[in-house]
Image 1 (cartoon, rainbow, N blue to C red):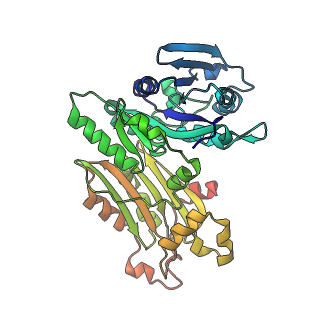
Image 2: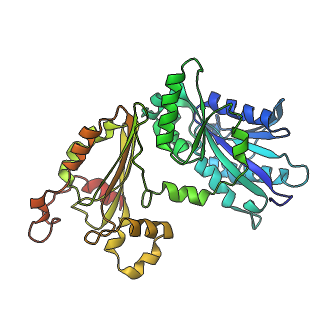
Image 3: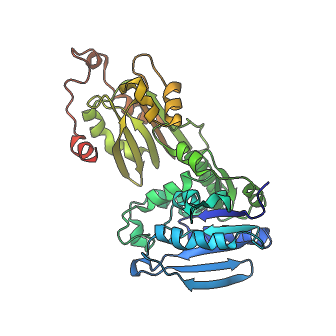
Length: 392
C-alpha cells in the first residue's frame, strides 16, 4: 500500500499527437478526479515553454514556464517535478498523467523520478505507476521508415536536435510496458498487423486499444526505470526469436564465429534494408576483444564500440560490469569464445528470413580463415576503422 502522501504518476508519451491525446482523454474520463499536465515545447527554440493542466472537463490552467535554460532537462528539473511534488499529499488527485511533447522519449522523463529534489528522493512522494506510449496504426510504418530529422517536423527538444523520426518513435515504442494503439475500426486487419508489429518490437509491453476498458487497471503497479534500462541494454539484452504473426516476423541471428569486416561492410546496405528495425551486438575479426553495438531503423545504421567482451578481461575486472551484464555473459558462455559472439535481431514485414540468414552467415569467417597461422585476427583489413577509432 502506498504512503498517504504518495501520488501516482503515469507518463503518456507518443510521437503521434492525436493517439496520445485520445489515450489521455480516455484515462481522464475513466479515473475520476485525475488530471493531466503537458509541457508544450513547440517554441522551445525561442526559449518558450508552456505548461497546460487539464482534467476531463477541459483546461484548468495554462501558463508560460520560467526556466534558466529552455531545454527538456531544465523543464523536468525546474518545473515538472516541483509541480508534481506540490500536488502530492493531502488532496492530491488519484492519478496525475504526464503527457509528454511529441519529440520527448519516455525514458528521459521516467528516469527523472530517481532524482533528488531538496535533498530528498522524488520517489518518496511520487509513485511512477506506468509508462505508456500511444501509437497511430495508420502512421506507424511510414514513421518507422522515416529518416527525416525530428526538427523538420517542428518537434525537436533542443536547438540542434538531429534525431530522426524513426529513432524517436522506435525509442518511444521499445521503452514502456504499455502500448496504446489507435486506428480506424473499419480496417481491423490493418490494425491487427500493426498490433503484431508493436508486440515484436517490444515483447515486454501489453498492447491495447487507446480506449480499452482494461487500460486503467494496468496503472496499479510500479514502473521501474532501472529494470527498463537493463531490458534495453544491448550488452545484455536477450532478443527473442518470435514466431511469425501474419506478415510480421522477427529473426534473431546468433553465431559464435567472428565476422569478416570487409564482407560485413559490403553487406550493410542490404542488411539495413532487410527489416524495419534491427539491433544487437556483434563481433568482428579485426577487433577480437571489442563488443560492437548495432542499432538500425529508418534506413540508417549506427555502429559503435562498447568496451571489451568480458572474456577479454581478467576475472577480477568482471566486478566493474553490471550484474545483468555478468549474468547474460554466464548464460551465453562458450568454452572457446566466452561471451564473444553474434546476437542481432531483425524485425520487419514480409522479412525474407532465408535470404537474411544466408547474407549474415556469409559474413562469418570460414574454416580456412579460422585456422590461419597466428589466429584468425591477423590479416583482416577493417573498413570500419575510421569511424570506430574516432568513437573509442
